Image 1 (spheres, helix red, strand yellow):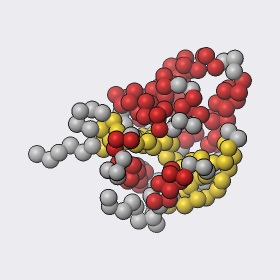
Image 2: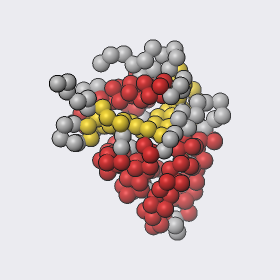
Image 3: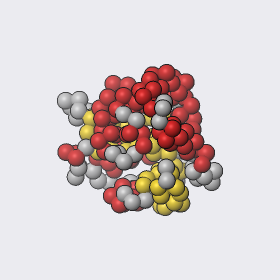
Image 4: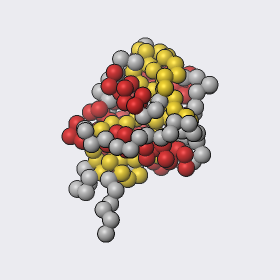
Length: 208
């Protein structure tokens, strides 16, 4: 009997562990600052959206050691997610209602798809995180390869990913997966690199 692959489609049951990984692995991100309860609702919503999907690296004992979240269109995923879980996503944000700076940054995040550039692909890698104890096992690249395959299956030829310009490790990882720097923009007052990959010409991710 063939062993079960550790790479599984992201599902509702993974939301708690994925949210915890996101908050641990993307410590400087704005979404992490909104709290783990918000992130759990977000990662419950993404795989339920027609325009969203993701994969997890799930050990036989059920522990999730990495994930990648993706969107055919980031704007559509935001809209579909709000329609499905808008009230539940809003509840953890109630404590920020009297903090204009947070509300302003949330508005900028929602507007990000339209501000990043109409000349860039709509499809996007939203987030990818691998736990420390899984490093050295090529988990990140294997998750990215699964995402590339699903984008291709959906007839999407190119996609983007955004990352802080000062995050050297993440920038290097995306370049190693075949992404090329397209533009550097300001996001929440900080420089953000936007990378693009053309799946039709990239040759995919090398076997690991």
